[in-house]
Amino acid sequence: MKRLLTFVLLMASLFTLGAACDFYFEVASTSVSLKEVFYVKVTVVQTHNRCTLTSMDDYHFDTDGFGILGKTAWKEIKPGVFETWLKVESIEKGDGWIKIYKDCTKEGYQEEVLSMSIV
Image (tube, rainbow, N blue to C red; front, side):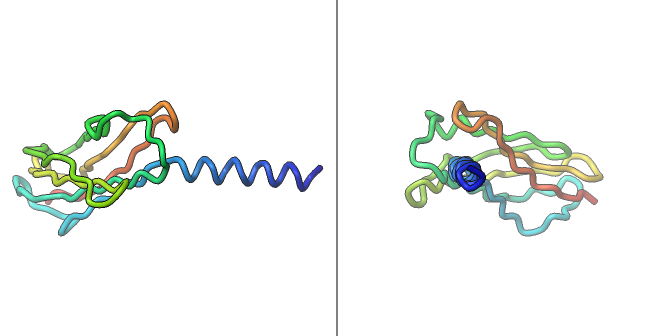
């Protein structure tokens, strides 16, 4: 009975891990000057086969200490892997962040935060 319970819990956790998206940020430096304009590459890897989100526009961005000046259209670079570029300006000295998030019916709310310093 103990083995069965362990197996069921293991399978449930593997299913949960396999059904989320992975978010990645790429930036030249995590320390920028005030009023500096720079670019951030954002990659979304959909690690499950049947995404319940109907559009890449269902992924959202938020910031603290930064302003998003522009964003390229999402591009599927290989099956299930999408990327976009953000044009960002630092607008407030101190610690800030850029966040990508989604809220889907399958896995709920998920986010990734890129923390940066503005000097």
